[in-house]
Length: 119
Ligand SMILES: [Zn+2]
Image (tube, rainbow, N blue to C red; front, side, top):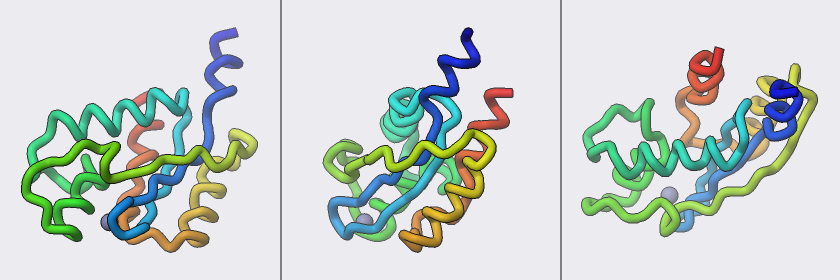
């Protein structure tokens, strides 16, 4: 039962930068709101010199827009849940979105780490 509930919420999301419309795509194998909360909390807790791999969204804002004081994530990004493919096709689907939006923020496959962490 737990497994079924979990699978209802996986999928692909796209975060769009409000400052330049650059997009970031990611996948979650967990409830989407949880995944977004984890972006929010790492945004809130890391400092600006943290590794890009940990905080790609914050890194984008700081380096592309030269913002020195950390803004709220909601001031910088709009997030949309875009697709819920068959569970086995999550990686393929994420790659498709990556090609579609040609994201420059997606330099690392952050979501894979998330999935490993869940195992
Ligand atoms: Zn931007």
